[in-house]
Length: 316
Image (cartoon, rainbow, N blue to C red; front, top):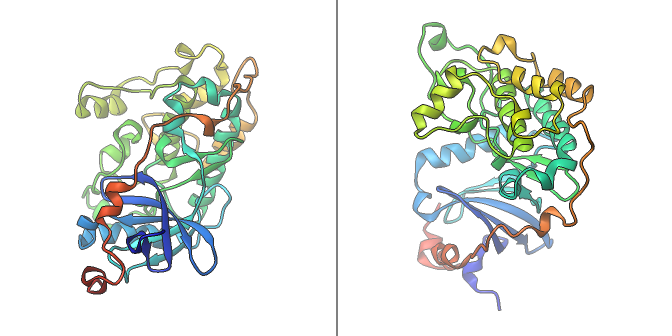
């Protein structure tokens, strides 16, 4: 029997997909239609946090009009229950970071497809006036066929120069240290070439099995993005062609002017080169067969107030 606490409005929660520091992502079924969705829901302790609600609302504003096969689809932003949540397309696939725990080999035969689809999705995003600002393996869902969905538009921003930036004021620095462009680290005004840099870091990791820079402290890692020379991926994967390695290094140029001008240019360059000297063969298992560890929904379910309870009824 399904317990009343398993429901949030018309949605029955069936599986916890991911638990982040401020949000849960649930698989859910809409009872009246039996359609399956993903719900990105604030944790109970964050349900009244204005900043976190603002991030969720911003993500909805960015993504609600995006319609591309390589971007996750957003359907609704719901606030009338115990915690605000987004209703998203359910895409049952591991993220790239989870698969890379097994090394780059299981993904090698899909690498070109992953690169092309990710770049195509980001080109569409840029054409609609948004920079993602948090391109990383965790934010790329990849299914068994190598089809990609880019997720998480929480910190996406418009590539515009504000009066404050013209006067020398810095932007708030947000992102993921292993993949941030030098200008993002400095808090400068960003354009699409910042995502080009981050994607270069991701492609490096896809082919090498490790990010281009590591550090013993956060500051050391950021300093490498700012000043260290970009390593060649061929050191870690001898099957990668020089053309591909050189393109990655240009994508990760310290100065944005030295990078490809747009995601469309990146896509065309990748289409015109070979990534590997010898075509990789598929492994004898599917990506979905990988054991990425158990996920339990018991603790998360305990945080949800029972339907019809005072806690649920008093929430706006």
